[in-house]
Every structure is written in C-alpha cells, then in structure tokens.
Length: 157
Ligand SMILES: [Zn+2]
Image (cartoon, rainbow, N blue to C red; front, side):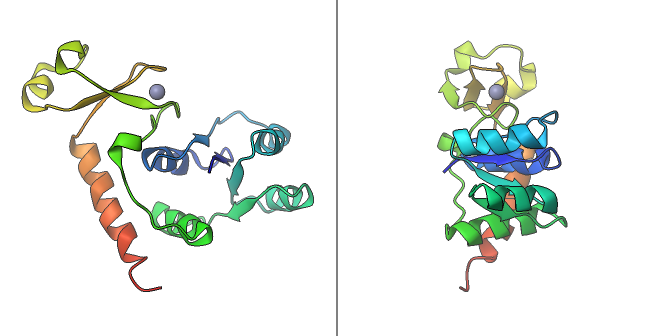
C-alpha cells in the first residue's frame, strides 16, 4: 500500500517511510496535484484538511483523516484504519528524506561519516537516490521508543 500526504504532514511522511511505506510528500504540491497523483498512482491520501477530504471522497480516492495532535495518534489512526499491526523492519525502511529504498552497504564503502561513528558502528545503510547514509544512532533509539509506545496501542483490540 502506498501513500501521499498533504503539505502539513512532512513529519508523518518521514515516519511512514521509516516503517517501509512508499509515501509521497512535497511541501509545494498543490491540492489538485495531490489528488491527481493519489488517483494516478493509486495512493491512499493522508490529510487533516477537510476540503481535501471532501474532494478525495468525490473522486473515490481512499483517504484517512489524520488527527492533528501528535505522531503517536496519527500513526495509531492509520494502522487501525488499515487493520495492520505496526511492525518496524529496518531492512524494509525507506529513506525518510526522499522516499527511495535504502540498501545496506559495506563499512569500507562508507564515506563522509564522522570517524567516531565509523569506529563504533558496524551496520550502515545508504540511499542511492539522495546519497544519505544511515546507522543505528540516537535517532534510531527514539524511533524504537516510539515503536514500543505505538505497539501498546494495539495490544487490546
Ligand atoms: Zn534518500
């Protein structure tokens, strides 16, 4: 399943990508473009914009109304609507920055990463589209903590 978010939900798009979902987000997309890309590329629209929701309904574009409060309630809503348990599989994560796939690379191929990271970390991934290198650092710890909290939302149906 693939997604497109409106221009307000960049943070949500990054999270969805980390969870492995192909998710389009561009902060300069007009509503018309969002709707036509959702339709052409068969994407579920994630938005909090009532006008956009109405227009999506009228075009039979699947849409999930996203709460505005925080990422936890947003992701909970999405997975509950999809009836999917959220599972974080880093191997299938997409690049949070550009939505392309990321691949594990050999340590010897890692460039432009601080020496102390290179010394301490063993596993590196690279996005071959934007070139960004990823490793399990403090940011990943936060994602794992988020994952634990998110899972508690799904323990009791
Ligand atoms: Zn990228």
